[in-house]
Length: 239
Ligand SMILES: Nc1ccc2ncsc2c1
Image (cartoon, rainbow, N blue to C red; front, side):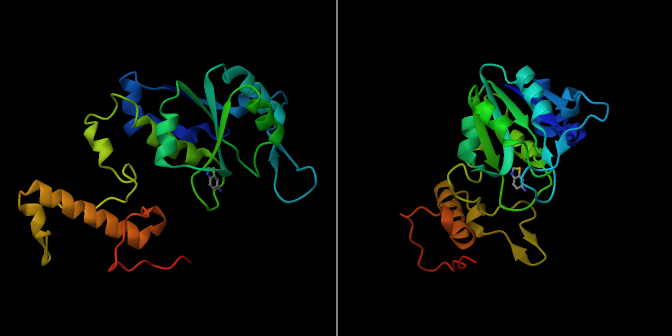
């Protein structure tokens, strides 16, 4: 997979050279290119934003630099990923979908966003996915690009040493992860649940699944499959 990221803060993407994505690059599974949007500006001040038509606070990213960046990078077969608070929610299912693509191009907006005409034009010639990583206020799309990249890259075939570890993870089966324990067996008067020391793998698997369901019901009732009924789990009311 090749990933290109365009941002006015390219250094923000430096962590992609470390840990998971860094390893993928070293093994040839991932080709990563980070670009400074200002490289596609034409004026001496390298202007990337301007005031919004219709008034209002903040600035909007100008279409010209983005248009030229996409002219160069949005080649046939590239999926354009636009992190935005108004996007579709990013989920593990969407991460799996993006992991099937040959090339991703992240357009990281700042300010109040990118002139809509850039996205409208891109829709006419490429797959465009506007994606949100959550309902809170960030200053731009770079954090989302980091998160989406990590979630996608670790799904690339051959990247994770033990593919089995991908199956048990949180959200892979739609549930939150069960609680985990390691040595020592007793710590500050707190003991590891005995079932985990029993060697009974069926009992351990059953306990872990029940813990995952209980934790999901308590913290994320929206994720609990309708088929599951837990009569003794306190589910916090939706705020
Ligand atoms: N403010 C905000 C919230 C979510 C989000 N997701 C991708 S960019 C972004 C920006």
